[in-house]
Length: 293
Length: 335
Image 1 (cartoon, chains in turn brown, red):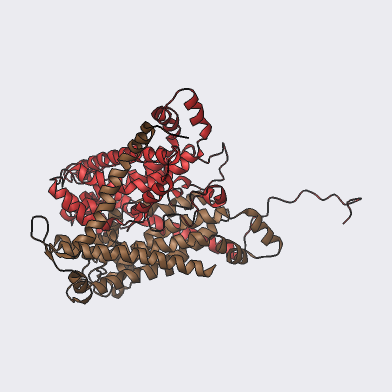
Image 2 (cartoon, each protein chain N blue to C red):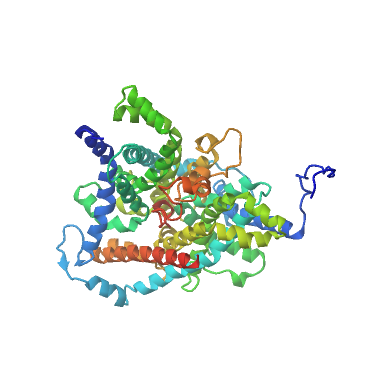
């Protein structure tokens, strides 16, 4: 069927708002980020000096930037996310998927921390961790363990762990919900057949439900790992990379490069590295799950 | 087994005796325990927002407030400028939702209902947006905004927020628009509607449920976003809630009551859509049947996770749920 030119024009008009936004704000900036990363540049209005891969070289070798530590911190977070957060979420999802009393209430409660702004969560945990008046130390003192009360966010060794707790806590509900939808999607016939064959509940979970929701587990793992690499809000609110850069992650490093040290080229380099890492990990996880099949 | 003379069995016992094995009880205790862990910080926030410092700092740390100090709220709203920040967030959220809805509905219409070469490719192109982290564009957008003298304006965050919500908006609307029968387009066409008439009079009114889903998703995304707002807005009069709360807690380091009030004010709107999530916003709602899991509409926002797409994935070839384009976390849930 031949379509008139006006039809084609209409298509363009329909696509135009989305395309303009999309290309202007998402696609072009990525290319520009890549371009900036080859320059030593002090920001708008300053002269940019082309240095090739100099920024990348400096990023991985400089001790003052210490990108490797930031990367290690976020990978550690990814590890804990996959090792603690996801199993906990899976456990909750499996339990809730079995028609527990008050299922809906539990779901809403577990999902609540995800809905609350990370800034609010961060500020709340700042108060919980407060060395003098925080709930945590108050409780420890009430239990008579004065010696366990610590300056949680001010201690170089403890701060990173103290930051991980709220991050992991907040997103359990998110992964739980992903997995719960999967558990609910398992055809009841499968469960019933397994039950008739004499499977116990844990066997049903092990041999029916978990293999069935594997695609969702994959999505969850990808979200957890890329989310950890990109983590910013909570760490920014809680410590902003301190004390003595002990809790620095790539995103906080990027922001401090940009707006404290005015190194726009280096900031872009970190952004580019983050994108590459996120895509690489997503691909790796995809491949790992495919080989499993 | 022969059927003749078979004993008549009573119908299968459907209602089982309540299961009270220790493991069941234990797992229930586990569920309740986690619920308490989830609720406690929120409970604590709401209670200390109504207390004075002597109660918060020792006398009554986790109990209900003895004197309900609503003055904390008025203080946060007036001297803490929470009123201003709240209004800014509402303005930003409303504008972002509007732009996202219009742009994504129009694009989805062009992709799913109009026939042209390359529409599948175009869809894939848009779905790239799901995988792009916001970090990728922060420097170039900042530079462009400063060149255009648009830093510290509402547009400085509205435009990026809309662009980053767009991919998810299109993904959700594609699902909804696919459910609208194509016969309607044909009928409209026979009755003399053009492309625009069909879109405005037939499709747009039927997309109301999608408005709720896309709206809630976009709302949460821009209400809670910190990184862009923090970088692009420095003027106090334009600050959105996340940045404002940050600034406020810097001012009131010793006075916890008003901070608690500010945190509560910022939180309430994000929790209410969860409660008001009516079943009618659920496209798969079958009258009276509550078999659908709650939050189902939000689940739709994550590619390949809606119960529907899991169950009948074969019939929706456009998005194979787990080979779909969205392999990275959407920006909203970026940490």
